[in-house]
Amino acid sequence: MLSLALLFACNKNPKEADAPQQQQADSIQKENTDTTKSLKPTGDAPDWGPTIKDEMAVVIEKLGALGGKPIETLSAQEARKQPTPTDAVKAVMADHNMTPPTPTCDTIGKAIPVSGGQTHVRIYTPKGGQAPYPVIVYYHGGGFVIADIEVYNAGAQGLCEQTKSIVVSVEYPKGPEKKFPAAHQTAFDAYRWVLSNAASFKGDPKKVAVAGESAGGNLACNVSIMARDKKVQMPLYQVLVYPVANNDMNSESYVKYANAKPLNKAMMAWFVKNALPSVATAADPRINLVKANLSGLPPTLIIGAEIDPLASEGKLLSDKLNDAKVETTYKLYDGVTHEFFGMAAVVPQAADAQKLAADKLKSAFGM
Image (tube, rainbow, N blue to C red; front, side, top):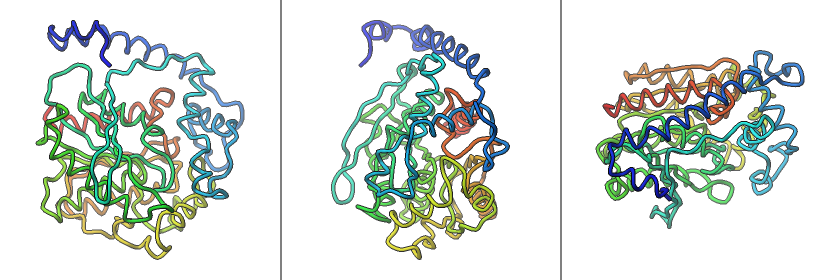
């Protein structure tokens, strides 16, 4: 809900109305950045991540201190109750008296129709700026089994705030209750709903992009493929953050970072077991994107994390997109792990990655 002060400010120039709020956000960000520079882990770098950055190591240490059990030893229902990297970031901020930034985007939840029923979306709308806004359809991670739009709030909110665009974060069905390709169908249905309904929430239906993290990166790319194949309006751009893109668990990064945290090789095998009808299904080009027809897809940014079993497949997908003549930018962030993208409050590389994604999206939107 907008405050009374902001309602009065609506009569002013949008940039003038934004100024005090932006100044406050900038001040908080500076204080937090100064604190972040002092973050140091209590122990040595882990064997699985000798190059890990200090800030990233602090988050991983905190995640361990929260007492979660190994995901691969649990049922899907138990796994969904475990502490998340998001919980760890919040705990680090609390430990160091860091002030959560004041959101500069409003949010509202909404049920939308999809094949077989409904799904939930969270719509992030800039508090300032000028409507109609470009729209980014965003898909969260979690191996198609765990997590939700709340766990991945920071990534979606960061894109809204930095691009001054609407972000529609999409919930989707998960295995083992609803296995592949249920999530893929819902992801595409939600994209089509955005195209048809953008104007109703101040969005510009002619300026729509897709983005996603991990499993969500896979979904975002599949939405572009489905739009191409079904002759539906294509996204103007796609941002794929450490996407699930291959079924090779003996790749260089799988071997090198088999025991990494918060994602490891055993967890990926567990995701396959819970999300897919069979292990053989992992060869389906909707999962194994490096084998898919990638021609004619929109310009793409792929963001990778060095300390991540999925690092090799993100780079390979970038190479395959380039081979298919798709304009592609690839950026690997050293010293960080899977899930780093939403940690901009405490991990400098995440702030840089969000800025890179925002800059690419704004350029695609003509902003």
